[in-house]
Structures are given as structure tokens and as C-alpha cells.
Image 1 (cartoon, one colour):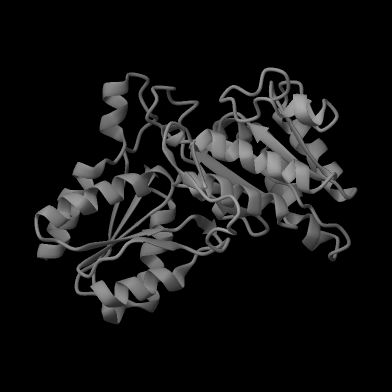
Image 2 (cartoon, one colour):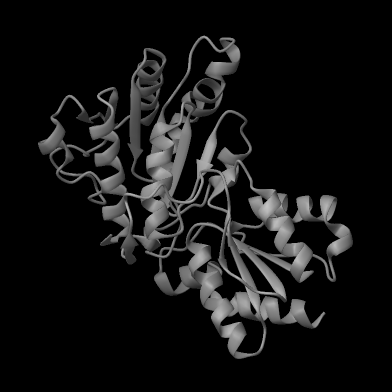
Length: 325
């Protein structure tokens, strides 16, 4: 058991993946000697060499495509893209090529490839470096989409992704980078693709992922002080979406609030709400409610940015109204 922060947990996962399999290698901008903008790869080039921890030109389309080719040839590349916003430059490679290779080749080629990136706001990085684009990827068959909301999951979800035989996108959250917690690297962690109940409750279900899990847990504690017993579910992966864990909770509580950082329009919270309405309607005592970010690009000013992102206070207010309904 080690006490580490979120960034260190990801670095340990990468180190483990490189040590486990000589076919695994890293590539990305400034990830070698510099150790990456967020220091996730610090020291890995010294330990594993420049052949396996490779710096690339500033061309996401080029190095994501190169990783795809390497994966088709039997290697297991891990690509670091600094910000999830920059994956948009390589979308043809991700959506039209990587996600479909196994299907379009009749299973002749696998693409065991991991894209590690980070998203979300909270650090004043402005509109082009703060987006929450997980719903874009979750809509694409052929991709697995993981969003670690805790320090242990920063390790276990990333390591599991590197061992997956199909393309995975792991979207870390920069607002969690300083979080510190115990990590049991010897355990296998919670099953990949399954949601986890972070807090048991009986009156309302709060569904969240990534940094919103932390806000939901804080809200649950505040609600408890007011006599409201909330259950908190961390989805962990959006594709696959573990509907069964959500349904089991809703059948118990009868009420559900879904929290996402992205704007509500077209977001994954809508998928969660629609699934509950379609398959668990008879268990609901009130309509499913969603909370999301403001329908605007995130402001650069931190005080304005914080107003555009859901926080515990907004969750408490919405949950209290829903329980009273």
C-alpha cells in the first residue's frame, strides 16, 4: 500500500505496463526527457529508453495514426495527448480508423492501443483546454472510454486499458491531479467496465463520473447533515455503460440525479436518464433530473469558470428538491 497522488498513480500504471510487456511503448509530445507537461511520464525515458518512451512532433493526427499502424503490426502503443481538446485534431484516426479496424478487417487485425489524455475545467485553462468531450467518444462503437474519478482508479483503469486488446481512451481530470490517497497496486482493483457504489444510501441516487464524483460525495455528506441519505455511483467507464448498477440503486431509492461537467445538450447524462426511463420507469417516484455545465465555452477567469461547472452546492439544491418532490 502506498500513498500517492493522482498523477503518480498514472505514472505507476505506465511503468507497470512498460515493465510487463516489451511490446508496449509510449509516444507523445514532450513525454521523454521533459516528462510531459503534467509530469505523468517523468523518469520513464531514463528507465526504459528513448525507443520505448518517444517524443513526437506536434501533430496529433500523425502520431495517433502511427500508433494505430504500430498496434496493427503487433505492438501495444500508449499515446499521450496533452488535452482532450487536442484529440479533435486526430479524430479521423480515432473514429474512422482505430475504432473500426477490427470490424472492417473481419478480426484479422486487433488495435490494442491506449490514448491517455486529460479534460475538464477547474484550473482556468480557458475554452480550448477545458472541455469535457467524453460523450463524443462514448457514442462511437469500437472504443472503450474510461474516466478515473479517484486516485486508485487513475492507476487501475489506466493499467487495465493498456492490457485491453481494443482501443481505449482514458480521460484523466486535471482538477484531480493533486488528490492523494492510498493505492494498493498489488490488487486488481474494481472490474474494468463496472460502476462502483462510492457511498451507500437509501433516498436518492447520485450518478456521476470523473471529477463530478468528488462533488457528488461532498454533496452527499451535506445532504446527510440535512437528513437526506444519498447513494453515490461512480460510472468509471461510459462505454461500456454499467446500467445494471444504476438500475439496482434506482430500484431502491426511487429517485435519481445525474451529474456531468459537460453542458447538458447531447451529454452522457441524457443516456443515463433515458435508460432509466426506458427500463426502470415503474420504480421511479419522481422524474430523473440532470445537472450539467453551462451551455457556453468555459471562461478563462477562474471565478467565472467556477460558475459554469456544477459543484456540491448545486447538487445539494437539486437533490433536496428532488427528494421533496
